[in-house]
Length: 122
Image (cartoon, rainbow, N blue to C red; front, side, top):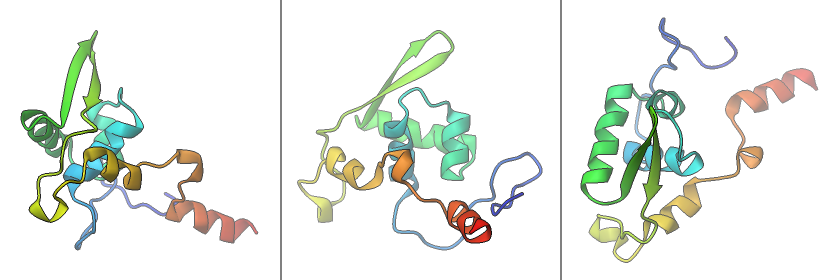
């Protein structure tokens, strides 16, 4: 494996230690990147278990930040960009403002593994 350690079931090991972004924000950003994403893919991208992602999605839907519709066996998610963030310290900030910081075009996103490969090749 190049860079990321993986458990025996092929899922990247979870990150340890504190981070600047919550898992709820991370899942919301992954959905904003791909409204048709499967829970399995969101979990792998966010380094969470599928069960954790299901719970986070349920939280976000219960509080009106996210909804979904079934299309065959898949879900299509809809984010409410005008919904205001929950914490009083972010009073007045919307989901759209949060996502503008977190969601990037994949072509411009740099991953640590990409940097290591560039250093090795040249």
